[in-house]
Amino acid sequence: MFSRTTCLALFIFAAVLLSTGCAAEPRVSLKGEEFGVSLARTREAQMRGLMFVEHLEDDRGMLFIFPREAPRSFWMKNTRIALDILYFDSDLVLVGMAQNARPCVADPCPTYPSGNPAQYVLELNAGTARALDVQDGDRLTLLFEP
Image (cartoon, rainbow, N blue to C red; front, side, top):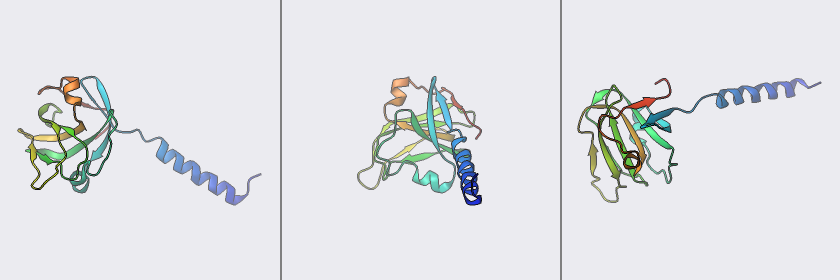
């Protein structure tokens, strides 16, 4: 028989395991390829983005979710890896992109505007958009509840 302390410790361990192990990673699909994404919903997360990230797996990215469509502009300050920045409208249709945006090495950093109002922005490793032959009008699919 387990002691009361052991039972409590097992209960807490099980609760932690269930709360962390059952949450599905947010995923998106673009041109038939799936990517696990970190979500940037808050202003702080959106400002930080992928700053200081040294490596991004090929099947990973970051999805920025804004409350409404608006012209967007990103920069690469403190970003260590080159990225493709893909801009999507409220219907998840690609309305603009910046391919192979390079890390910024001197102020002022160049900006990468959306060109059209966007509500979602997907950052992937540089070269991914070209490899998938991504074009304006392509649709992003969210495989999670936003």
